[in-house]
Length: 338
Image (cartoon, rainbow, N blue to C red; front, side, top):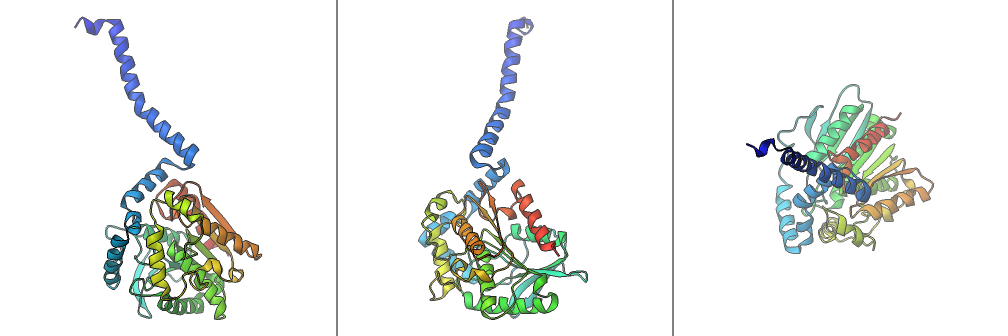
């Protein structure tokens, strides 16, 4: 008891407690500083990268045997009817419909709709949308006057690009009859972003009017992934590996050259595109080609806006991270533009 009244011991104890309490704060500050200075991103964005590195497809994509097995699994699973993720509540209505034999979700169908968004989801041409897609699309639909149409286009390995083009074209024609091309936005992410850009070039070939806006999120615009700069970005990408992507691309191409303009928008007639917006993160495989695609559209004298997420991974606008907020607001503003 005597020691507890010793001023010197009490002082040492207090200093120790203060130091112990300050340690986590100092560590948090150090982590924050590294994220801000080195990666130029938030702590939550860093945590998102770690999560995706642990739970994502990259390891499976990089292993030939694992990826082949996964493709076989998906060929069966994708033939089953898709259901929205459980335990998810949407702010807008969601209708599970069929169009030309293609399961199609329609969000926010209302009498006051005066525009539409056709959204082509990503997931490497072999997977259906995730909960992140639906949360993102729910926000877009809730904050705009748009009917948001999400076709679950035929996926590899059981299906190829010819089937998807045919059905998406029919859907676009029907949507154009209802709203007019000037009130349609075509948007897609990752593989769906590349498909959206290629499809809009296809519209030019068949003489159909371009949509008012083409919004591309982390677009895969060259299925061949032959850009030599990609090797550098692959080391930092927490989600994707070139081996798996190239194989999926070859299957999707169905005997055609994956670099063909019909499949790889970066090699097509980009001068036909209208009001393009490209989002890309600096820690994703698709970044160098996304930047190059934007530059080629601008070089033709057409409008293209590039939004770069410093230190961010594939599809960052879809994730619950602070950096996504500005991207989502920009997308909402673009879709709502009269």
